[in-house]
Image (cartoon, rainbow, N blue to C red; front, side, top):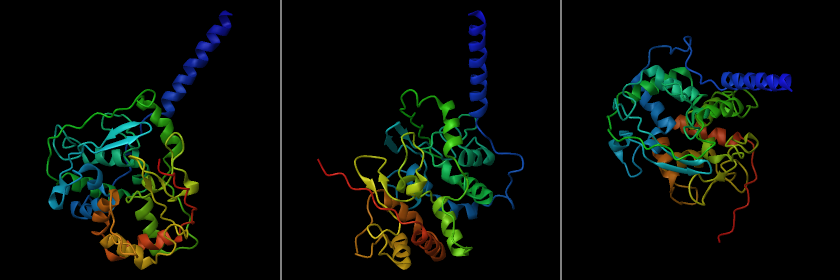
Length: 308
């Protein structure tokens, strides 16, 4: 019995050590450097691609007010309520004391300067597909924005989801920097569209359903999903006839610029903020996004729940 007890203790210790090693937060490596040096001017364009203002600016902000990234927007999920943090350059309330490398580490690996895992409400699983140059340029641009002294709200996450170390296992399972969709043949426009949608644009974070532990279901990529908040539904944006299959590439590109559907309906809700970002992209980039969306596998939209 004594030997069995000792063996159990040894196995438990070994298991704990393995868990601790597997779940260790990852930081930016010494060889992960931008080429050339970070460019804040280019970063302003990446800022639009990544849609940072949509979550971190005040919901009613317009114009230059969207550059004040004081956070506070609530995301009520099955795992708890997450609040967008202050990512302005304020040295105390925001990320003003962070280095550019700290910011890039957060975006690429979901790791804080103090070595803690971030919750995937922060779309680092998508930002991991961004190029190093784009990541560093964006970080440099964030440093130039107005400082906001709003204190970030703490997340309201119950046990066991409040044990951040466990997020290391989640990352092992679901953070995959490889492309989601394989392209049928090399095509610069499609490749650019895939990069924008799967990477900085992080479209799949809202338009793709998740499994019970919050991992994106790649088999239903962009096939629509329950909205993060309320009882709404984020639509299927694949070429399925019940989705946007009847839309042309120019229809999609126009929607991303003007927020109008082929039927003349105006964009609303959270997507209105997205269009504020995509309208700032070049015509070529909007066309690339549209071309990619027409090329992904069509997904049958799930049946809508009847209103109670």
